[in-house]
Image 1 (tube, helix red, strand yellow):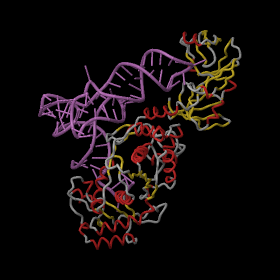
Image 2 (tube, chains in turn cyan, red):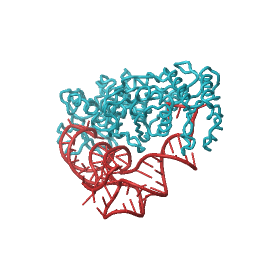
Image 3 (tube, rainbow, N blue to C red):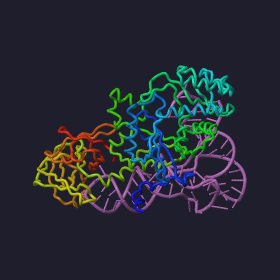
Amino acid sequence: MFAALSEKHEHKKVLPDLEQAGSGVAMRFAPNPSGPLHIGHARAAVLNDAYVKQYGGRYILRIEDTDPKRVDPEAYAMVVEDLKWLGLGITETVTQSDRLSLYYDLCRQLIERGGAYVCTCDNEHFKELKQKKTACPCRDQPVEKNLMMWTKMLDHGYHEGEVSVRIKTDLANPDPAMRDFPAFRILDAPPHPRVKAHVYPLMNFSVVADDHLLGVTHVIRGKDHIANTRRQKYIYDHMGWQVPVYRHYGRMGIEGVVLSTSQMRAGINDGTYTGWDDIRLGTMRALARRGISPDAVRNAMLAIGIGDTDISFSWDNLYAENRKIVDPVANRYFFVPDPVEITIGGAQKHTAHAMLHPSDAARGTRTLEFDGTVLIPISEISPAVTMIRLKDLFNVTITWDHETPSFTYAGESLADARAAKARIIQWLPVQQATPCTVLTPEGEMTGACEPAVKNELKKVVQFERVGFVKIDSATPDGIRAYFTHK
RNA sequence: GCUGCUAUAGUGUAGUCCGGCCAAUCAUGUCGGCCUUUCACGCCGACGACUGGGGUUCGAAUCCCCAUAGCAGCACCA
């Protein structure tokens, strides 16, 4: 009962039932370790996690590193960190490069069953035959010959490109994508960062082998895998294994950030981006750095669900989820962008006490000393403006001598300010202003903020009337913050 | 070209399987109002959609057909 209360986020959005899930599930998240996780990955990771939590069972992290060309040795750790940040309930982790011998054994069995053959056809040639629905000469080789050739493959008897193992499917299948797809290949280079290998399984083979070996019951993946699912069924049939339950969700278009691992890496290398957590990227670590909470990511993904329609990811919806989480928590401070110094005539010294959070007085206040001159945003002053209220301080009238404004104390009455429809704006005492830069994906705002902001390092605060920001660093030179959202 | 998947408001989503309770849900967004010493939060209200055309039926968002659009696969990538 109490557990259910603490899990209200997970129950906020109910995902559709999965068939055959009554007695628990075993699911997996299977990224390629080519870089850190981004929002695209988050959908698969969160959806599978939600189902495991809903039905109970195992959640396997399977690192799919069977293509040495697409392995970044640092990504293994990054993936684990990112999943931890997301708060997923991973129960076990396997790495495919540790399991090559398992795949080799199963391949031998598959050949023995007549479900696969070793093909020496030139790639282009095979493609032509495939289009014509005709068998290549290797397809009818006796099992013994295939086994010999398979052994020779493993014994380094062939070089890259000379042979491949193909799954026997149905050459008459109307979908050319189904016809005798490859299952193993030889790679002379590059070396795999973790193992010494020469013969590599292709995704469709290693995935089936592991889903079976690991007892995976349900698979939720993008619909770009629909063809792979159909291909994989041929392997299940050959081996006589039970097929998991599949769900394919639609494509998710994401605008405004860079997601391609190769583009990100290139940008980092040439200095365009500061790193994997550059706020212009769509990685989990970039979101984290910008002040997006992992629960917001999770809730946004659950709201999207597993529909098979292609969708476009909405940053607004993510921000709305994040605002729900962050608003009650974030302390409030003044940040004055593009500050201008003004002197207010006729005002006594004042001490302002502003609440750290407007709906939680218990959190206390911050203290700002007024002594005659303050910083305000230059954008607040224009000849149309005749009165402003400095928030938590007092009212100020502005009189204009042509282009030149002068500022005069106009009393403390909030009612007066309301009656005059005066804007209530943020301000800073000159001697308490700490230089501050707010970085947004579009550019930066420079100005000043309250000195106490330095105590909020790595936290999300709200700069009143500006938006939520995450305090990234505080040095003697000033404070750097990342804009989260309004 | 071949194969397959999808099509509900700006965005996401419910309803579609088993046609009527849907003059279509909820969230987000935008606008307006209230509250408020923030342009935040909260509250109230408004705006806004069944891709098009046929068919079946007493009745279609829901079933069928065609069209259109988008997406994916046809890699010795995952």
